Length: 171
Image (cartoon, rainbow, N blue to C red; front, side, top):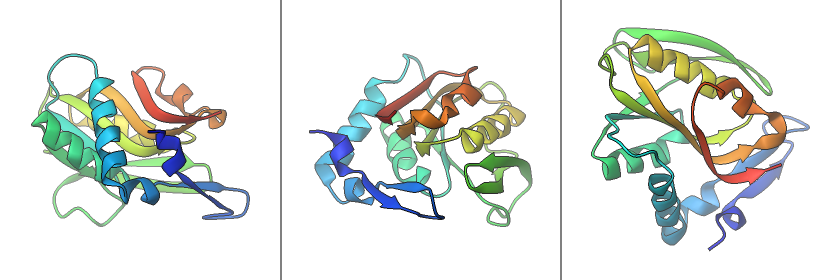
């Protein structure tokens, strides 16, 4: 099964010149989703994962499935104003603007092993900001994994201190 065949390109979304990678066709197919989860698990370094961090909002889909398979907790990293408790905040740039992410301060205990997951690695700003949030909480990042990586945007360069794994790559 070729997972790349389940990714739909949407031209000029969310703005002109951006080719959006739509993962919903993959989410619609149970076998494709199960294969993706299996590949994510197989690509992890050996060792225990305590928490899986998913980035709002499409990162939540697989992050929760991975947390379940790994018997780990799930942590949502959200946009401003969505988390009700004490938070850390991190600003970042993305390929079509800038934004802010937040995490609960008590989401990760000092020294916990954390897997970061998001749907797409583009310029790396979102993932790098999330790594900073995880480290503010005291977590140790085991891996940053992505369903899709847009290699031509060189986002992995912003994550060069971490192991990066992507199932589908566009060069």
